[in-house]
Length: 300
Image (cartoon, rainbow, N blue to C red):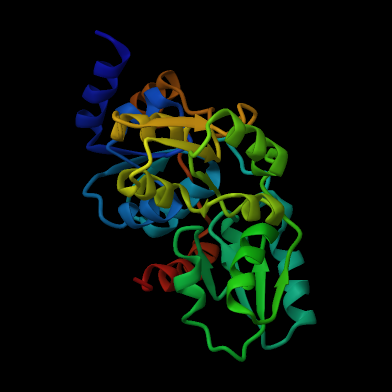
């Protein structure tokens, strides 16, 4: 029996579902029941009919699934799969920020810890940020944590007062306008899509600024036969699989998140077999964090 068959058998035995982020290894995406970006997987986590949710991605994603599914067992293949951006702010730092800006609306990118979500009024993802922010009254000051680049992307469109925490994604921070220029020279005419976690000069140099879910939609709908991709390279597997008639090229081969690669077929199998690496969130924190997540999910 090969490892994919082992995983399929364990899923059935455990009544489990596997969720995998678009940045995971291709072979992990292939054994998952659902792949997607943070928004797609957050929604999916509320809809699955399973006793066990195995989340392949980074820890804050599994934490979010656990918050939304307190009666289910949520597992992560490797509990050391953290997110450097999420670790750039803690709850006490956010509380201090809120004291300095009384009356402001606290908004966190879903790439944050449960403790930070618990201090916020609402969450956003890169896929729904504009829609969510449009629901907040125009006169309110916005505290946006932890990603300064996604926050800057939204505030530039909205033209109102944002206070941005200076966090960032180390993987997307590697991308530069020169890399985009070089990629365009190598593939003339191919549109460039980048993630809004990229710095402003990179976003300005691209044609499209999209979440990974948005990139998948753009790839399906675009008439372009070649597309340049400026985000973590794991998404290339899904793009090529879903669009075999098109070519996809990374803007840079350096865009690899080591934490997203920590889910492997071996530790997926082991987690299901041994029901290990259970993700738990303090109930008091989870209750408060869930309000911010639910507020986000209520925005269609």
